[in-house]
Image (cartoon, rainbow, N blue to C red; front, side, top):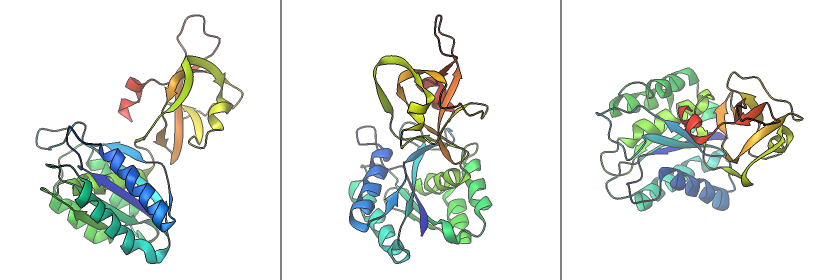
Amino acid sequence: MNIMVCIDDTDNLNSPGTGDLAESIAAGITRTRGASCSMISRHQLYIHEDIPYTSHNSSMCFRAVIQTEQLEDIIQFGSTFLEETSAPGSDPGLCVVNVDKLSTPDALITFGTLAKKQVLTKKEAYETAKNLGIHLSEHGGTGNGVIGALAGTGLRLGGNDGRFKGWMHFEGRERIMKAGRLYDSPFVDRVCTREGVCISPDTDIFVDYKVKTVLLDHKATVLVAPAQETGSVSSWRTLKKRELKVY
């Protein structure tokens, strides 16, 4: 069975972030249930004065392959984990989607897209989840995290939103390497320009000392742009952290 798990609003300014908790849930179901979990993607949601959030209003989502009979057990595991580890003052929400039985995926994708540009309500989230047969639950505080949790699954399902948690680090500040070095990484599916043109493995790229992948066309993508550095023998460079904030 293919599922998506997403959590939101689990932290405060002094606690581990929501991404760390998502990582712990993934590690837990991998270790104890034999699940196969993907990388965790971060999805930026709408910033508005009517939406309370800790720092960035983002949810964290991952995919997993599990045995059909494990679904309810994994939902219970995630629920208990959030209740025991979410920070004081947080409003955690959990969403678990059975992707194989999602009859109208476009409705979920639409909810995620709307959550990036307008204020949504818990009522709207629960109605959407009920109509689509999706597990959605709150585990403390106001429970408003259910909105972002549901939205995160829609954005992950859409395949064109989010940055993957973590960085790939390289020795030294910067270096030039073949794109093939990036393709060889188990965390990279492709190397492309922002316009979607893929770079061949034998192309030289000016690589920053750390590289992050984004989710585009359902693939973990390293984005590159024309190199502007004077004297560089490379025509391309990886995007810097500030440039990736739009994803």
